[in-house]
Image (cartoon, rainbow, N blue to C red; front, side):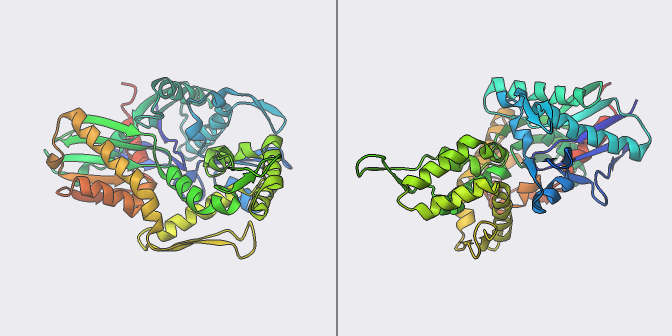
Length: 412
């Protein structure tokens, strides 16, 4: 019975199977093996759009709700809260299940096979908290079952990437997978054998590319909307700093849709009324009223990528106000992200300690995951393992390649 390998990612997803002993990826969208992990609830058509269609609807200004990075909600109580979406009472497990259902349909249509079982990737740690980490897998399992699968097995994402990248190592070499994804960073230390790999240790932290976006947004964009500005007291001349929660949420991909509720908009208006710098909060009010949170997030992401390796770039905020932009010069982005990149390097050393292997024993560093393309992350890891050869795996498909290869024997 065929088993579908599924990489349900924070930013992008992919699927594949084993065919003639090799990984065969499913074309989830026209001409593309990966699909954005995004949905859009179209209020006019009463349909849930998935993948690139979701992003297109957002950019076209369609009336609705856009969601990205829903994987980061797994394990949180919010996953099981029922909400009225397109006239249905749905929880976010339903949202994930419909996304996974689309993946299942695409795979069955292309292969002519029926997939009743799946091998799903998962981070080593969804969350730092043990209870939430356990609950996250429970939530994801339930989403697969609601999507129409009869059973699902799980494999750590960096271990799948190790399986897919073993060919760059000679027999006996010691490799460290560095998987920097959208929401988590995972590490697997493995030794390459003649016929198989030996997993020595796997470790992970809840830190990834969306955290990079959040930091850049908080420090460069949110001050233009009032973050750090002073609010007058209703009585007297004293002031206090504007509350940070609304800005923290506006800079966090998965929390943006929840800011369009009446209480958040009311808070923004109250802040604008008493603000020492009312023009800043007028922008915040318009961002929430016009639901521009994701437009800002995309602009921040684009600016971060433009500054990668060049040390300079800009965040175009013309969607908020004509001519508004943030310059990203003098290595600002790298300086903002360096502490998190160093934390990733420290997590890699924890992996080594778990295996009781000295860092200098690593012969190969294998970088995978979209955010591994950031030079600040590569620099931090190479500083920890300066003697290791560096290999750049397929950033977006290394995990699904490994899951596809492992799927044939996942339920043996």
